Image (tube, rainbow, N blue to C red; front, side, top):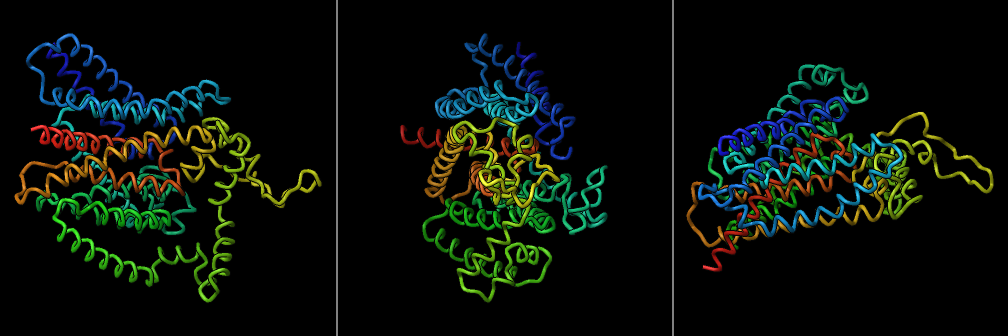
Length: 484
């Protein structure tokens, strides 16, 4: 039995890593011919885990249980709480899926919620401690290669090529890098995850010089990639994540050191932002044009707000989001159905200046274009699953943040009591990277659909799961110390 379990353990790990690491290199696995092979790998890895657990159940009285299995038994309660927080939304999403009008699109929407949960279960119960360390370094290496490829591809081809396919002219004509994705915003989204891991290495007290160097390189590559993508949403999100790093990144130090580090980092950040804002780079020019900065510069605050608002309403992203909100108003409670945005888009994308009673047609109909996804994950969730779906989805999101925050607090308290630096303890950077990644995706997805890209969702879920494992370990150690 032990030999079979070892084979399943190794096969499951390989199958698990394929979608997490290879998915971003296949255009984000967005199209069905890339999505399904990756999803099948995740289901096969889950099957390997299920067989392993059945074998374990039959031999659980043996004395040769690994340390990882003993730890999982000790942290069963917080894991169960997290799973039961996810369960109501999954049941609701399944019910909406089986009653959907368009089966294939609803199926993909449901799997985008189910597969990250299966991935997290595999990280909790299927990976050994060594495999989790391997996975962490493989994710770092993968993100670094994705960033380097995007920079090199933009330098040599101007991003006219996306891997072996031709890119979109709308993007490369504006000089925007897109890496292995067709859309520069999605490339910036995954580079944001790289930045979160890099900053967590730099800000953690227990990282040696080698890890800090690795984190610095990853941050530099990620920042260059974001700037080359010229993504405005990523630029705004970058400011939010830097503030989150200031709040949670220095918790391992004593009070005086925390205050000094935060004050000095805030001052340095303010100077850098002031310098960058006053540059005439293409990235900042794109920012200023979008928000009509030059037109509103000499106006009163009220006129400036009106000018900026009028400018934003002319953009395609605003039309997609406003159309989705109009569709949601037809079914506010349960939504229009999973995957139905693209099918109902032509009906709701028209301008709002029509009057049905007066027989006045809208001034414009947006039936000349197509919207596969709302350029906002949160708005699409509200549109397709309604208020009920949004509230049920916020339950596991809040639970994840709550567990990460508790784990980070426990880890920081443990470090504040010690003046020495243990050689092997990497919980803090893992937990911190999860909190920063949650902040990155939560804000960036307000104006883009990163989580509709399966590969980004899977990589993000792997990062969060690894962070939660470290958070549970830190909290378990804190409880054990208190009892002692």
